[in-house]
Length: 140
Image 1: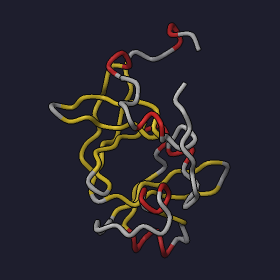
Image 2: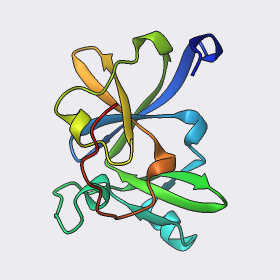
Image 3: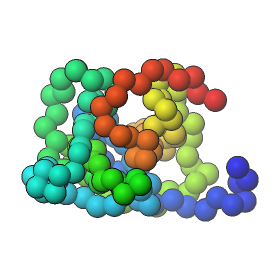
Image 4: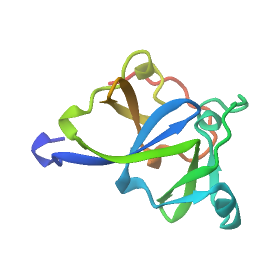
């Protein structure tokens, strides 16, 4: 990938899921719904814990769903709360910190940015297709 083709900035939707600060490129967001609206529209959705660790209970109580549409099928990630849309310089994106680089699913987490004192993980919604068993994949 040539760096001269990358945009200078990226708009990220920041959110919290099970106590983890996460962000997604707004280009991947098709919409935002309440849990009830998603159920009425038949949108399949999961928490990150259900995707990464099927069968593990979570103490969070998500009420909002970020919708992604890939190949026509809408699916969503349940989140505890939305934070903000933040414009971040692409050069500020860092590689995934250890030890997360050893478990990134099929590259679901692709980078991290600092926001104040917090590390915010960047997630690729197109790689989330619902609860699955992902194995550790060494980072390249």
